[in-house]
Image (cartoon, rainbow, N blue to C red; front, top):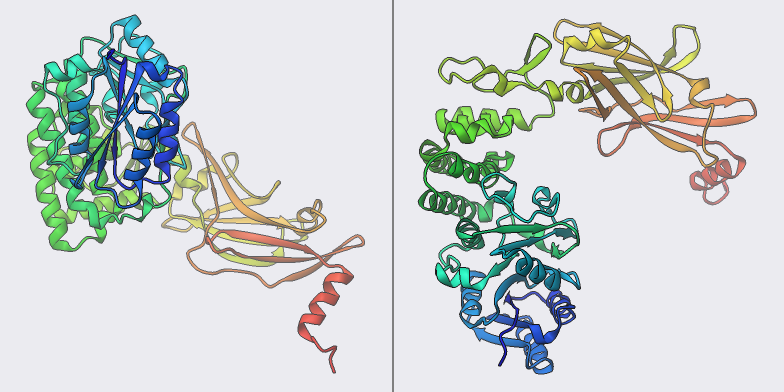
Length: 522
């Protein structure tokens, strides 16, 4: 029996009907059935996946091999079993709910042979809104450096590996990790590889988000995710010597696996669980969160993880809340830069640099978030009837931008805006003259959302104007020429300020009368 060029390994547990699409994409590969073998392991499926695998094995007996085992609780054990039976020069791993582009394996194997590569990545895309980090697929590269590229952000096993490399180093999946068991495998394979390549010229792999993927709650998997982070960081520390190379990989794990544990849902955990999680994360950070890792980290994550390492639970909770708030806390403006007063800012107990708190690039975005406080009918500066929208910002600096950098609009119409500091922030008044508001209206009427645009600090921010309570003005019947419209200022279910403009026609009037007096007033 000839040696196949590539063995595709499929660990399967209850993935119907996605499994059928996966298998169809494999047997249709342009590399040809004679150069391909599929080794699939049914990990105790109960939804018919095992029978579907057997159907393909019967139809393609020289290509598809199926092994059945009792459920192991994760993809590691079935993947290891499949590796034990693989015969190909290369192995490729695919999730049983994912699928490949028709030319994927032919292109991957050709590249590995042409460049003598031990690991080859093919461009991976998400479907059904599944997120796939794309930085590593920016361009085709014959040689990719694990420590000087975005590769640490793409450590799933969905790659082509030279099987001789896998067997030479005894690489297998961690059966003690219910989550993330493929990352140590992939990381060590890339660490041991003589050459890693990436192909960005084709959509090789389609990662599918299952319709029920969002049903797993955050809290129910929290402990699992925390242990995964601990295991991954411990594995990296054992594999790579301290220094810049280790920091390059740990940057990913602290920025992704660890930082996501300190996202706003952390605040919903009970205080004792929060303390337990904080203690374990602080232990990780004290051991491995080096200055080299912090220096390369996004500023908001840098502060969050440093406070987790250096602060107490109350300070960590306060910071997570501050970072989640749509408003910035108090800011200091110095030399044209904005610095947020988040936990640790200019606090000698922490000793962090000011630039950790630099939010200048967010200034325009934050300033654009006005809170409407009142909608009313009044008169503009010229004495014309106008809709008056009053809003507020907690930032006094906004009053300096009124002349050139602040615009409030309803659809295409930009209002006339004036501002006034009120001691703790800025009050913004915008007048929308009714005649101009009705100058162009769609035949069936329309709803216009109030939007705020701010230009500041060399940036532009835009946001719908919102309210933190229900506001509105009385409906107003307005005639403009021969047309009559009903204008209704209010807020929608998202808390956004809207103005509904409805043409008044005999048909609409009759329809409303029928709703009021369904029996004709008798």
